[in-house]
Length: 368
Image 1 (tube, rainbow, N blue to C red):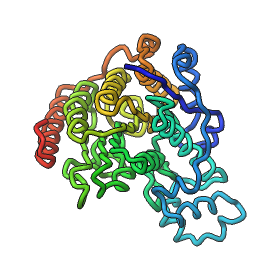
Image 2 (cartoon, one colour):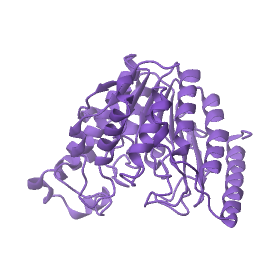
Image 3 (cartoon, rainbow, N blue to C red):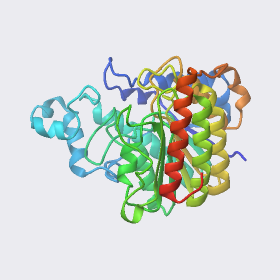
Image 4 (cartoon, rainbow, N blue to C red):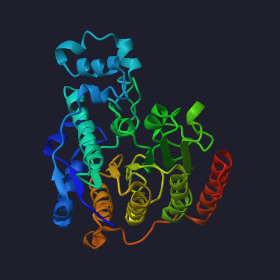
């Protein structure tokens, strides 16, 4: 089932450095690459360098005024002239989205790396492509949010749509993929699926089963929230009951997946109780569905993950092993067992999951 696999990386991606104290540290991507190399998985792909996204590519989803503002804020000589209110309105008024001299250059490289992956798949140079630096899914058309300045998944989805594809975007990050969803909320030929910790407990506070799209796009947004302490078994049940049937109903021609690994119980920014043991299954199911529905076309991205050394390199290497169909090379990296909460928490998790799956089926007219 496998075919040519492209892996997009270059050390210049370390320029995407928001601050020394920021939770999003690009070293996690470099550590992932070192692990992919040391396991021998690097021998089963084509390593391709990133490039900066062009202004035209950024403006596929972002307003020209916003892109111009980001470039201005990246210049120390010019940023002092920007009115304070404009900075606030664009989302750069908090420690989540700090201003830096490499703000534009760093995040444009991430977006460009994702575009390299998308173009490799669209051109046929690769069946599958992985850009672990990508997955900055919170940025909106004219506003930064949640560590994200340019929304590289949305840029890739828009570009692929413009090439004539029906695009399915699946986001398994612990945070709701709100930026991508909002950008395509009224468009019927881009499906967004997000599995995430409930917005009742976690940023960005959105992504409920009743949020299904608007206008012509009604039904093209699918949201499954999980309550705190959800561990591997219920998380995978939700994934298995929702993702394959929704994709089969939509019939995409390309998959774009955001594969944030902050569902792990060691992640400091969320409250789920997952382990790396979900990743062989997630990677295998995406792989099989790409071949079943999309002639193999699959663009995989990174995303969240803030246990920078303990979790991220292992999770993404295990996942990449499924992309290249060599899970044996990463088997020793997996957590040895799942982590389960106490009986009362287990009961709450299962009850919430079954309730939300039932609600999701009701609003989408599907029997999950």
